Image (cartoon, rainbow, N blue to C red; front, side, top):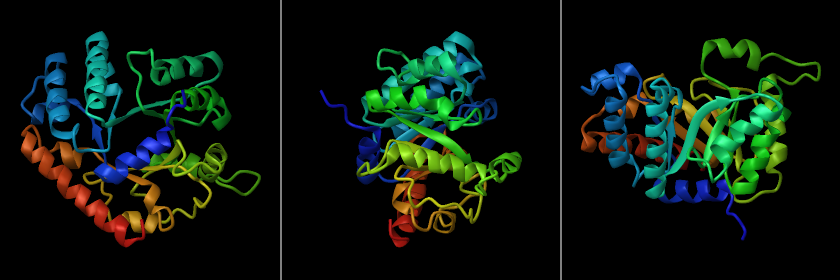
Length: 282
């Protein structure tokens, strides 16, 4: 049986539900703002509300694994349940884990998140390439085998990242461009969208990066409370807007815990993204 690729599923989800990813980031301050205890019980209630608010209308959700892991085995169990619930509603789950290692270790990460028999199996993960993009090969292979995706960090919004990501190698390319070029090779010729993407922050401004051959999706976090706006997407991705997946977290989650207010926040930011991306030719 042929497995449908993540890129194809993502393209369809974005076309049907709109170009939007919502981060699921239950940090302690947010739980407190929602009137919930900073405990596994508070975490579980937070996730119940987000599933109710987003699962039937958002293309992609992005749980941040660390905010679940901090509660140990109970937190991981809640993450497993939350993943299942979102997927049951047809929402794609991109798990923000930023894993990166070598050999048998990165293969174990691939088994944990990209193997259908795993209780943590998701549609896609984020990954760190700073042991070399080639070190992530087991993730790419597992993803291709099971119709999953991998988003690799390229140019992030945090100020500390620039010293590494904008560093220039002996061939004249920045580290970020090297990452993009290597991911582009994995997507070569795939239509409508490759399954291997990059992460480029929505607050980085004009990048000088060549994304013309990427062929895969671009996750753009940092919108909303972190300072990025939908209009910034025009400047950062002038030729790749149709492949951009804008990601909001605090801007949306700050409207909780009321379900209808959360849905209203989603509708608002989605309308902004649709308007900008459509006007830019996406």
